[in-house]
Length: 516
Ligand code: NAP
Image 1 (cartoon, protein in one colour):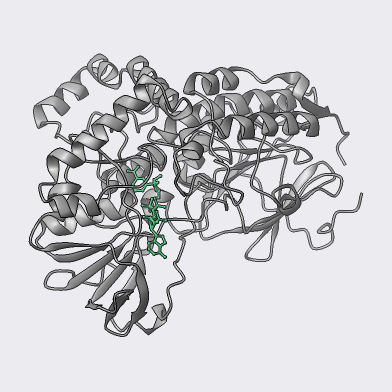
Image 2 (cartoon, rainbow, N blue to C red):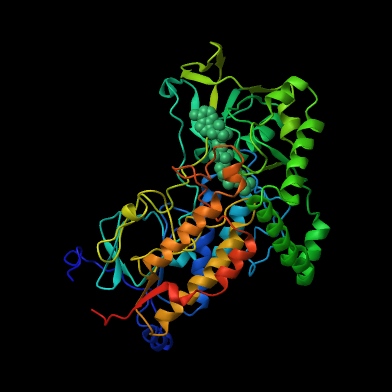
């Protein structure tokens, strides 16, 4: 087959490999692995690939720094709602977390340190975006934004789930004369002290920003179209003595991470999501209701903050202080719908003009994008846009039919929720490694799931998704696809762990092709 790019091909040179490694390199049949994205999952892939002895690796990163979500989100109050010691690679524990729930900046530093320690930066080509991937002659031909083409035997898409901001289409938004930006594009040149600030949106992001600005005494208005349930949580500090003890005794750190306890918690949590009437689900609902009742004293405000859907239907917000924050003198809750934005502020449907200097759009992300807008053309005329015409789908969230050797970390239909995506990516990596081993062992040169396996998985997944509280709970959220079906993993955590343990080989199509 003549590849569309074979004429102008300018293959980028493989990484330098020394003589001693060369034999091993050859025995791997020249396996060249391209990773897309240098966020949490891309860094993980880089580390694991090197650990597996693969030498020919390149990570393409569209930005000029690593970090993904933690590089892009820098809004005030940014905090991870997964406990610090669980939002950590299992192989790179961190005794130095200062808080039980880490601030975003600390997480970004952790990834930068880890990247440096494992020499990941040397593998990365920054400021480089892949625009198109074509599978031809048994390899992926990747067209880059600088006009060159790279070639890979295996592609790992570690592009993240929530990276394309969802901008609201509010009439007159371009008329605003003050500063306006999406929360993932926070403009730090704008000082907030002494300014009137509006925050639109009550997801985890909006809630964290309100908590931070209100605590700083900044005059802030929260525009909330749909109030969400909030689970109370404490966010204590690790003292210097505790951190010193973690550094001195790795076992202590191990105990703090308590992976078994963590897994049991996640299992209970996913059980609550997938079985809306279960004890766990009712317990969480009770805790959210009590949080609102006990912490918001004014009945009118309490009513304004009362969600119209079941707790857990939207991704649960964990916050130690939002209710306190919104009750401060400097904070205001606005429930009237936004009619338009004008030069001086936001006009609500009741005709009132609320004047502001700054508007922050905490309006979330386009969760259906994954590696798009990259165009991907697989085998036998298959392409991503056709496969994803109805909704993004992937067999076990990892791979797609007719897209050989193309594997995703945190791809569509995977577990997302109030638990560690690092843990999820590590399990997925263990699975992907087994697929790659078949290629490395010479048993095949191309591996992808069969169409039958994909269809079976998706039928089961959709049926299960319709039983989850995301579907039955009566709310709209970014978990739902364009047809209103939850896109995330609809089963318990234990099923995910079990599925990731070993591929069902009968679900895969293995092809051996002589080198072109
Ligand atoms: P989100 O959960 O999607 O919330 C978006 C908010 O914007 C919703 O309240 C939505 O209201 C509102 N909105 C959207 N368009 C609007 C419009 N035109 N007018 C008025 N309101 C509008 O987004 P997010 O808070 O950025 O969070 C996204 C996800 O990021 C979270 O679910 C979470 O997974 C992740 N996150 C995690 C952490 C963490 O600690 N791990 C922190 C922050 C974010 P409706 O509900 O009415 O649509």
